[in-house]
Image (cartoon, rainbow, N blue to C red; front, side):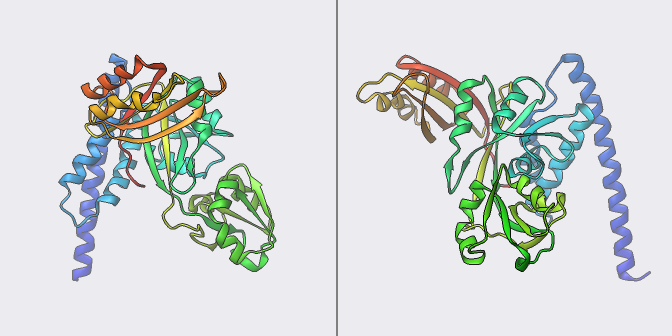
Length: 357
């Protein structure tokens, strides 16, 4: 037996061991599911998943890369969860939007994804328990906050249970993959804005037709030999399109933050964020005064946004993200302190820090 054949035989034996261990793990998962049903415990635990991924990354000595290890284990965790209880996740549709891609990266491919037509539809699906979780965009690194998502948190009693940071890579796709055949481009308006310079330099004079999402743009282009679409790599696979040009965004550092919403709070992991919303009395120095308890407690506020309350003229709702979990004594105390001078305070949730995907 030659050296190459011997090494390949070793790989086969290792793969057999991995397969055996995966099935052994699956049997244990099924046993855990029986216990959870008896105790009526929740099946999905983002804090437990974070613990598993971080523990394995810390144990990994290489040469297998940690980033790839996390992707593989995300799929193992997703498949394991499907053995316990199929997980329903609502996201902006049709399939292959960036919201769907963020949901896929967070929950794995074994989850059942329910595409809906709007961000409000995601909130409705979770609120009505049509889905246990929903994924919605909240802000883009170049375009800023998505105000409509913030507004919906005023109207729904839902919690933030996780966040997902996704790198956005816009691609020009078509049935032929040939730029010379393009007579129109379908695009979702935010994608158009983020690719404006490339479009002006490369497709000047070609009409841009607005679509309701990047995935819908890809779907339309798949039905038209003379059209192209700005969409994700996943959309190319799902709608059988070819790349005319990859990564046509004006900024090569384009990230979108997504929130996972549900009806339940997430337990503490030790590396968490908390989001709240509040309104204050209209008087000089009111915002400064209400933020003082956070400064006194040395709590880092990572974001603050304001939106009209739409209930009273010139009344505003403030949205704040901070380091820490609501179970942390100093976080709880600071929030309790601002209640005294607020018209309204709502805790949107505490959840694990999200990593880049």
